[in-house]
Length: 95
Image (cartoon, rainbow, N blue to C red; front, side, top):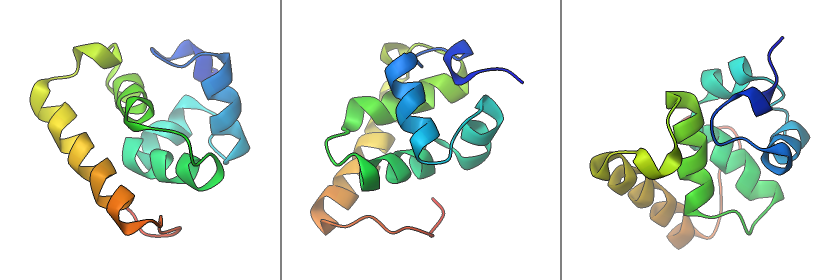
């Protein structure tokens, strides 16, 4: 089974964090999607930020996070900002 670190943008530290929240393979990350994975991380690691969300999306799309389109970055920022305003992160809802 491929390791998370085989994905673009996913280094050892991010792989450890993802594994700690039950995301231990590229297939699991892809299946959940960047938003759901970000929410899982945010619950355990409250200091994860928008760049982490970009990193996850880039890993799933097999592109460096700084090469995501402006539209995709805007969409992800709106998602992150929405939950930042809510001050809570739902556990079981899919996005």
